[in-house]
Length: 299
Image (cartoon, rainbow, N blue to C red):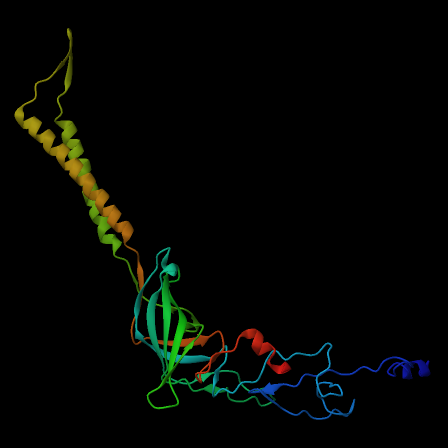
């Protein structure tokens, strides 16, 4: 019994020895030496052949490569900003297909992940103070908010008189929630009121026209039409004209009201929070494709 338990952790005779595969992480494209593991001996590096080239076979691939915050704005970073050029964002049904431009300026550093450990630590900062961000905005009537998606971020370059433009992805938050609440402006109410008054005039005119129409009177010899005076004919014509004109005006006002869409205002000077959804380079170098980033540790 004791011998069986003692032999569980020992390899069986003739069984191939298992080699522990550990990937070397890279920092800025440079390999870092790893320490030795006393459990298996040797260095924690990729097994190599006699020619010095890596062996083929299964390996642990490092999808994440450490990047310095001096040149990389990581995903999940957030920064305070102010609206420079506001927008009257349309809240119509098709407003998302035609967003309006908006301009923001970052007023402080971007805060990102904090170091782990028992005592924790202060979150890392990315220097993007003073950078401007352009975005596309559309309104949502149900929440009475303006939603902004980022397009381009422009920062001052390292050399005097130079700038760095970077495509960024993210959104604007206000009061701790996605989107910024603003006043709703609806202008179709006055047109609907005018259409209502025109419809009432049309109805009154129709009633006047019918009241002064010649009436048929039944007699013993048959139905005869009562004679109408000239004033009655004039009143009937005036009523019919008012009815037709009122109906035309009401239809016109309704068509104009249908063209009006409510807008939600995002005023200039509003304080907002920018949240970045994807990482981006801020040193002017082009961003490497995702597949190249995931295989960078293999080279």
